Amino acid sequence: MKKEFRKLGGIIIIFLALYFLPFNREIVKDVFFNGLILLQNYAREHVLLCLIPAFFIAGGILVFAKKDAILKYLGANTSKWISYPIASISGGVLAVCSCTILPLFAGIWKRGAGIGPATTFLYAGPAINIAAIFLTGTVLGWELSFVRLAFSIIGAIIIGFLMDKFFREKHNEKTFIITDEKLQFSKIDIMLFFLLQLAFLVTGSLPINSILKLILMPLYIILLLILIFLKFDKNHNKLWISETWDFTKKILPLLFLGIFIAGILFQLIPQNTVQKFLGQNRLFSNFFASVFGALMYFATLTEVPIIKELMRLGMGKGPALSLFLSGYSLSLPNMIVITKLMGFKKAISYILLIVLYSTIAGFIYGNFMFQ
Image (cartoon, rainbow, N blue to C red; front, side, top):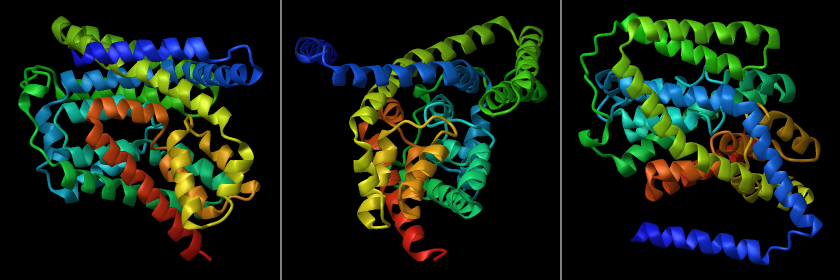
């Protein structure tokens, strides 16, 4: 009954918006058009080469990855000296944004990873992006680049550790996909299965020569198809596709909605207001930068030129770091999906921890480091 009332409420909201919004006014047209433009750019640049491969990897984790292996390194009962460092650096090779990391997070969490290591991975995945670290150093200076990297690793571990303290739980075995843990596939085949998909994801995300991409990416697909048809059985392949589709239908619509709303908000916020509040290394400036970064959507590597322009207009280095730390790990579409995956209490705690940590880190950097 509650679901039906929510559906009714959604229909009423849509009706009222269609009835009262002055769509014939230019400002309304511009706002909605900006939302559609951002959504189109995301669809063109990220869905096929980044998000869809991430869904397939997540589905593969549920079907082919042994739960014992994930519990061994990322489980709730694994030594924190092992699980958190592994989770904090394991996403370093993935040039992914705050949205593409979501199906990967959902995959390892549903397969048995503890809430602490899983959220450490969720935060660090887009944060410790090798391509973005080098771009930051080249464009904004290596000081900010290394500070960003250090605070990202520290923050990922702190946030994951606190999430574990707040919501430590023993996973209910019934919540996981039941597969035969004694898989008949060799470790080499499983490793190749994931490495080929990761290679496709990384190659599609990196700013490398387009001709080289056109050579490598079809090659990865061909090798993957050969591996699937020769080494894996039909039932497991069907289950893999089924789990991939399950992730896609749950996450993709919410992402699209969130990206559209983020485009609208970006158009509504006056640029001079952003510059005014980000101009100094005050505590409020860092807090504003953290909230602003959390609400906006920055595609992979695009946060660097945006922050460069804001710094040229007077933004302090502290707010710049705060914007980095919250902007690449959170976004409006990311928060919508996280709430769906984790539940409201866990999601709001994770979001508030990131905003708080980003604010404090930016304030420390802006006022007490490298003066």
